[in-house]
Each structure stands twice: as structure tokens, then as C-alpha cells.
Amino acid sequence: MDELIKRITAFRDERDWGQFHNPKDLAISLNLEASELLELFQWKNSEEVVEQNKEKLQDELADVLYYVLLMCHDLKIDPTEALLNKLSKNKEKYPVEKAYGSNKKYTELHGGTNE
Amino acid sequence: MDELIKRITAFRDERDWGQFHNPKDLAISLNLEASELLELFQWKNSEEVVEQNKEKLQDELADVLYYVLLMCHDLKIDPTEALLNKLSKNKEKYPVEKAYGSNKKYTELHGGTNE
Amino acid sequence: MDELIKRITAFRDERDWGQFHNPKDLAISLNLEASELLELFQWKNSEEVVEQNKEKLQDELADVLYYVLLMCHDLKIDPTEALLNKLSKNKEKYPVEKAYGSNKKYTELHGGTNE
Amino acid sequence: MDELIKRITAFRDERDWGQFHNPKDLAISLNLEASELLELFQWKNSEEVVEQNKEKLQDELADVLYYVLLMCHDLKIDPTEALLNKLSKNKEKYPVEKAYGSNKKYTELHGGTNE
Image (cartoon, rainbow over all chains, first blue to last red; front, side, top):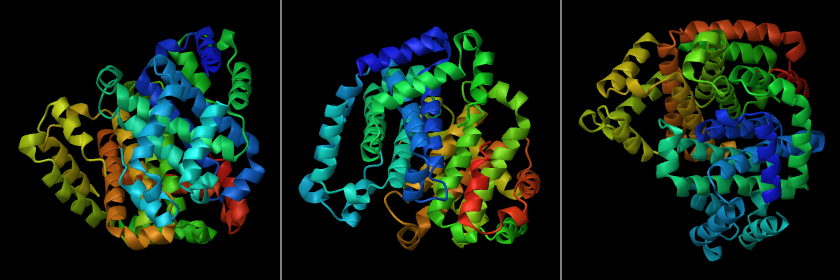
């Protein structure tokens, strides 16, 4: 992960783009890349997309990951630690005995986590 | 990265949630998490948010990363490879001598990469 | 408004696109159009965009409005009534004496309305 | 439409919120509301949502419409004119004889309109 972040920031710094990268604009760009990922699925079902657009899926996921890691870097957040920490919180929010299995239960539980 | 993905899929499988996780719905959820990240910046500037909401920023970035890695896993995409591969493409799209520095040049170049 | 909705549904029906327009996919497309609107502001401030991109702003707002009205039509929701009804709810949520003026107050009040 | 816009701007002005409403932040808020609409469909199919969440659908569509009309007002764009104008453009982009019917054709045509 550290190595990836080094590559990303090197890419940016070679182009002197850091001056434009405040966190709010990075969050906007992350959203735009997430939309481009979703756009691959517009009017289609998952199967069609996975069959026909594997390379684009890979590229769009990479673009989202790029901004996640760039924001983590700029905000001095360790992405691995952040994720493990959030998983711990989610384990408490969704205890296995409550969250196991049914679609209904899952979406109900999920419906209340709007944060 | 592999270790993180193992933790994430273990979390999901303990809850038997894989049955709901088709790529299209994962892409929707990734977008919703990206929006929750952006929402932290609603009506605010970057400085205010970074000062006041560091923990939430960390949690929302973790949620986006969670779905990026989950989609990569399900689609058999290696996230590290995908990112390095995309960086290579972007190096060609944004050669240093053209992309270096000015805001104007940057946004013009960026305006044409809508894919 | 009724006249606009007639024009929109006529446009769709001439192309026989209604068969693909389930509400979930319409909501996805509405989000994609909203992103294209936001993309005009990527790495820029409002002034630059308003000066340089007036026509694109107009087109992207029209695209969002198109999907809002199409969803309203398909779900048998009257958009005027829905908006007036929501304004009434918001008047209770944001009473003038509490919500008046300061940025801080506003964002605090807003922070709690995540629904 | 004019009457609606008057109601919306009156609501805002009573609260003196106009000072925070630059177009970029309005475009962000429009996106956040679009996401809240999409969130109703998270992990669900259209039928479940339409049956169970009619009132929320109405409220979220109203929230999106609120920001569309507010942006139109601030940018001196006539929403009716913008929509009719965009429909004319789309009629040229998607001529009936080419766009009629099949899912495949439709998505292919749509795939090229990423602007």
C-alpha cells in the first residue's frame, strides 16, 4: 500500500498538480470516478457488463482507488488501519446473529446506518 | 492488500451477504459511500472539514475502499495491478511536458478524459 | 409541467424505451446526469464555470430535470405537489428563527437531516 | 414553474441562505439528494421500493427538483426552455429509426453520449 501511494504521489508531483488537490475537490473527483464505474452498468445487468467490459471495470476501479489513496495520503490517514478500524465498528453494528442471511433483515439493518 | 481482502470477504461471508452482492449493486453502494464522503464537505470548505471531521473522513474513505476491494475480489481483479496499469495509461494521456503546472492546462486536459 | 411531461414521455415512447425504464435504473441515470453537472465544476470555482460553460450547465440541468419528471410520471407522483409538500416539511424542520443566517448554524442543522 | 421557483427562493431568502449558495455547492447538494434517492433502491429491486417507499420516493424527487430549480433561478436559466431545447438536441442524437426498441441498440447509442 505504501509503495502504491508513493507511485501515485510521484505521478502527481511530476505534474505539479498538488496545488489543485484540496480535499473537497478530491472528494468531488472521487465521486465522479465512482459515477463512471456505475455508468458501465447503465441500463444493463451485471452479467452483460462483466462479460463485455472487464477492462473498463478494472480501469474505473483503479481510478476510484487512486483518489481514495491520494486523499488518505493528503489527510495523513493510513488506509489499512482505517479499513480495519471500520470493519471493527461494523462488526458491532452488524452482529452475525442479527445480520445473518435474509435480504430483508440485511436491508433493514442497512437502512438504519445512514452515516 | 491480500490480507485486507481476506478480512473483508470473511466479514461478508460470516453474515452470508454474498448472495446480494452482484457487481451492479456493489457499484451502487460504492457510489453511495462516495456521496457520504462528499457530504462531509457540503456547504463547507476543506479546512473546516479536515479540522472538525477527521474521524468521519477516515471512516468514509474506509467505506469506499471496502467496496473497491470487494468488487475487485468478486471480479477477480488485482487492485494493485489495476492501479499500476492505469497509472501507466495516465502517464501517456498526461505527458509531463504538457500537463505540468497550470490550472488551465490541467482542467483542459482533464476535460477530455471523460471515460 | 404537465405539458413538459407529455413531451418527455412522447420522446421516450416514439423510441419504445419505456421497456428499459424501471425506477431503479432511472434513479441510476438521474445520478449519472447529476454527476455530469458536477463534473463541469471539477477543479474549478463557480465563477469560471458560469462564465465559460453556460450552455453546458443548461443542458446538464435539463438532463437531470428530464429524469426527475420521467420518474414522477412513472411513479404517478405530481412534481408540483411533491415539491410544495416537501417545502412545508422543510419549513418545520428549519424554522426561520433557528435557521436564519450563519453558516455554522445552517450546516449544523443541515448535518442532521440526512434522509 | 415560475410560481414554484418563487416559493423556493422565498423559502431560502426567509432563512438568508443565499449567501452560501454558489453554483458549485448547489451542484454538490443536488448530487447528494440524487444519492439519497438512489439509496432507497440499495440492495432492492424496483418493485419492493415502489411498494414500500412511495412517500420517501416523492420526498427525494422533490429534493432533487428543489436544487434543479434553484440552480436554474440563480443561473438565469429557464427550466422549461432548457428542457425543450435539450429534447430537440436529443431528437437529433437519437433518431427514431436508429434508436427504436432493442436494449442493445439503446445502450450502444447511449454509451456514446457521455457529455
